Structures are given as C-alpha cells and as structure tokens.
Length: 470
Ligand code: ADP
Ligand code: ASP
Ligand code: MG
Image (tube, rainbow, N blue to C red; front, side, top):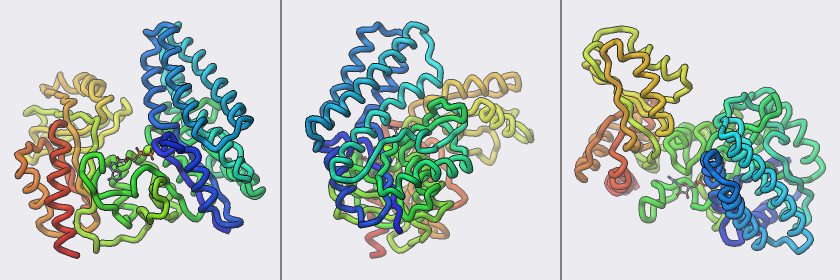
C-alpha cells in the first residue's frame, strides 16, 4: 500500500483560502487505502516574526511584546477565517492559538525580564509557528471526514542533538520512534499532521532543524516510514531555471537528479534546507516539488536518474546573506599547516564554510561563510593568526551565484560562456570555485550585482544552451 508524505510550505498555507486549498489537495489526491502524512510549515512569514520578536525581546517593554503577539494573532485568525471550518471547529482551533500565544507571551516576557536569550529559548520561541499551524490544518482535514490529529516534530518521533538552531537528527533513534508513533495512526487510516522544522533533543527540549527545515522533516518522516514518495507543495511550479522573483518567466525543470537537486539546495534554490534531500537519497525516495495553486501541473521530479538532455546549465541559483572572508599574508606561502589552522579554528567555533578558494601563489585563502557568522569568524581567525603576520578581512556585502547542471561534466567551454555572460554586464567577480563533482560553477559578486548576474546567466547561458540543443 502506498505511503506518501506531503509537505505544505508557509506561503501556500498563508495564501488566500490557503488552509482550504491544502484540505482540497489532501482530499483529492489521496487514493483509497493510501497512507498520508502531512507536514506543515508555519504560516507565511511567522517564523521571521518570531525570530525578530525573540531577538528584540531583551530590550522590549510588555506593550511592545504584546504588539508582536497581536500581529501573530491576526495572521492566524485570518487563516482560520478563510478555512472551511465551521463555527465550533473555529472556536476549538482559536482556543489552541490563544493558548499558544499566551505561552509565547510569557516566554518573551521572561527573556525581557532576564535580558538574556539563550539558543534554547530562541528555539522554543520560534517553534510556536509550526505548533500553531499544524492544529489548524489537522482540523481542516478532519472536517473532510478523515481522521486526523496534529503532532509536534518531537511527538512524531524526530530526535536531535542539542545544537539549538541547527539541530542534527539522531537517525537510528528517530527512525524507530517515528515508526512507533506514526504507524499505529496510519494503520487506523488517520492522516497525522506534523509540525515541520521542530524536533526534540533526547532530554525533551524543543530544538529546530534550521531555516527551511520543514522539507527536512518531510524526508526524515518518509524515510523512517519507508514511504513511496515525498511531495513538497509550494507557491511556484517546481524548481525553475532561476528564481521567478529575479527572472521573468523562467521555465520549470521537469526532472533533476538527487545530486543536482542537492547542489541546488545548498545554493538556495527554493530556500530548501541544505540537508533535506539526504534521507530521500539514502532511501531512494522520489521527491516531487509541486505548485499548490496549480496542482494539475507535473512540477519537478527529483530521483536518482541523471538526465543530460535538457541542457548543460539547468538552473542559476543565488545564495544571499553570506560574507567573504579573506586570509592573506606572505607567511601563508609554502607553510604547510596554516590552512589546517584556519579551518580548524573555524570548525572549533562551529562556523560552517560554504565555499573555499586558494590562489596558486598561496598568498591568500578566500572563504564564504553565512553573514550571521562573519564577525565571529573574523574574530576567531584573528585570535589564531595575527601573531603569524597574517591579515584577516571580512566583507559582508557579497552573494554567491551558481550555475548548476549535470551536463557540465566534461563539457568544454561552459566556464567561458558563464564568465563571458558576466563580463558582458561589466560585473566584477570576487572569487570563483568549481566543485570537483562538476555539477556547478559558482562565483562571488558584490551583493548589488547578484540579480543582474543571475539574469545575464539565465538569458545567455541557460536559455542559449537549451535552445541550441532542443
Ligand atoms: P515554501 O514556503 O513552500 O517552503 P520557499 O520560500 O522555501 O517556499 O521556496 C519557494 C520559493 O523559492 C519560491 O517562491 C521562489 O521565489 C524561490 N526560489 C528561488 N530559486 C528558485 C528556483 N530556482 N526555482 C523555484 N523557486 C525558487
Ligand atoms: N518555518 C521554518 C522557516 O521559515 C521552516 C520552514 O518553513 O521550512 O524556516
Ligand atoms: Mg521553505
């Protein structure tokens, strides 16, 4: 019997009649006897609102905290108002939302009184988004005659370490407990609705999987349950040749291999969690990305299969919110061990390096890190290296642009086309890297040039190569 995990993104849930739309999709796509698990994100930009409220709470008065709570109340009330729920159903979910808002208010007040926000309390605060959206969706599904209840990620069995903010799932324990907790519900024909993005540590504290983590929740549940497919419902037609917010009318990419999609997740297409595809890859699970506003469209299918035929560069992606770190100095040259010290200083401060390049002269090493950790990374490296005559510099104003596609492997002249397109717009390239997988060519430009660079690549490389081959 088929088991499908369906994840619904925040923009879809918060759109006009979004909750009703989700109910329609579950009702219409579910085949008799099929087992369905639904995973939901927080409504719209609720996670951003919560993060902001958490970060601001230290210096805020009670009145200011109540304003943030009010904003969240409005978003949820409007979604409930536009759902299919009738009066009694609405009252029930509203009570749940009010109880969550009250508990959130107390937590934010606690932060404001103590003037202290730990990573643990930040996770607790941001978890309210998914904890409020899941019961609403579950009530909508019940209204359509299906048995359903909502669970937090922890209640569904996702167990992580305690790296709050970017917690890492403990795979074996997660698989066992997800099966134990969800299987009986599925056997009874219920459709469990799981709050994405949030989990719990082995000590029972609420953790989060990192931004975009609901996609990760979906693949973790699917691989634990031996599901047949994962469907990710979002607000665009699938993975497109570029972000539709940057390029006018990009095309939908019908099929991607795991390797290509994983590269894209790293490079920010569809804001997917970079690790989200891991569980699907290990289990060989097909992942479909589909548009909730146009469910009849096929979307993008991600599988093991590699198709070269649709062109060399399939997608142009961009990673924003990053910073460029440069380590330079004559003492770097011909001194084995310095690079190791650079990277171990970063690793021991838990700073993730997204991209690296070193010139042959060895006079400098350039790295890309998340912008939020740039200052911290600079400090860590200065502590380690200044006494060695090495200069560390950080620039927060950059973005990474990446051209991704399996067809680049072994294809001559792709780099020339890519850099020719960028040069034609007079854009300065700050750093270049090509993964040895040859699935992508990525480079760093000033942030203000990023959208222009994407448009140049999209019109001159993606379309050009597709056109010449089709
Ligand atoms: P959700 O709320 O469904 O999780 P996300 O915001 O995480 O949605 O991802 C969907 C958004 O990703 C789209 O609205 C789109 O603007 C953006 N995006 C960026 N690059 C791409 C791309 N190459 N293909 C499709 N969407 C992209
Ligand atoms: N709500 C979380 C976020 O905004 C998780 C997700 O949407 O996938 O990052
Ligand atoms: Mg997302």
